Image 1 (cartoon, rainbow, N blue to C red):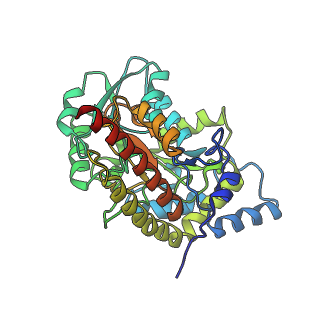
Image 2: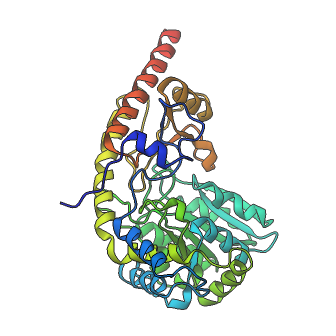
Amino acid sequence: MVSVEMPSLEEIRKSRPSKYFGLERDVISLGLAESDFEMPREVKEAMISAIINGRYHYEMNGVAEFIEAARDKLLRVNNIPVEEGEILPTVGVMNAIWLTYRVLLKPGEHVIVVTPTYPPLIGRPKSFQAEVTEVKTREDGHLDLAAIEKALTSKTKIITICNPNNPTGTVYTREELERLAEIAVKHDLYVFSDELYENLTYDGRKHVSIASLPGMYERTVTAFGFTKTYGMSGLRIGYVVAEEKIIRLMRDENTGIVIHPGTVEQIGAAAALRKCDYYTDFLKNYLERVRNRLIAELNEIPGIFARLPEGTFFAFPDLSPLFEKDEEAAEYLLKEAKVLVYSGNGFGNGGAGHVRINFCSPLEIIEEAAVRIRNALMKRYNAIDKKMS
């Protein structure tokens, strides 16, 4: 049976300095969106071989085997009808986000961002003097299509989604994406879709790329990456998919800033796409079990509701019955439970009252963190109950 090595907490502390930076030694970090698992062996071997054989020089148009592997995967998995000239390697998804808004937006144009979501999707268009309207999802985390259409203006240029969603874990259905596509076509809009967590969907759900739907390829920009699912966060490698005219503009922008993402990183990413389906399959099945244990523990706390995430490696429980502000909740858990989580309001409208918990860790670490969180929140609940009685 294929498995992935389970690192100890001490090993994780040493190998992921940013995740544990500034924290006391007894704190468990479930904050930063980073996997605690090592990248696949095949990725390491491909990069080591590239270095030994002198494959670490400029490849200005992208590493050929990476572009080819990405195209094969897009056709096979995402059903996106893409040509090689419509794929651009990027320095992670952050680079793709910057490029998308940079080449598509003019000052004064309008962007709708479905929230809660990854914060740069909200903040980056503002840096290009665009107006941003956040449209909250429904209570179940799925798209409020009526609210999206109501928020449109004559200056709207882009609708931005994150699917599967960071931080809620929602996986949008084909039906709701088809309705979003109808809105985009009707109003002649672009859709920017961050699909970094595409491999992590649970309970038999299938991730659907909106670019694969009829009439959407020519009006969609899609970002993919390796940093989360493959444990390759420090390698900073991803890719963006769009019409060739958009990719040309993005390439021109990147040439003047980063030249291109690392050759060695692209070779490693090609190996991930070609050889590592076993790794993503194992991780998905493993994290589904971890998710179930964590959510069950959280829902034992009176008054607290933690929705079962449909994808990603995040839980996003609502702690508003116990705290006025989610910053207070995060501070309380760090102090009382010795567990670092992120407050929800940083993810935009709809995040207030929640905290984001990253459960991409060995099960024993998540179980220990869950017990600490449950005990701390029960203490809080009992104190409030006693005060009100």
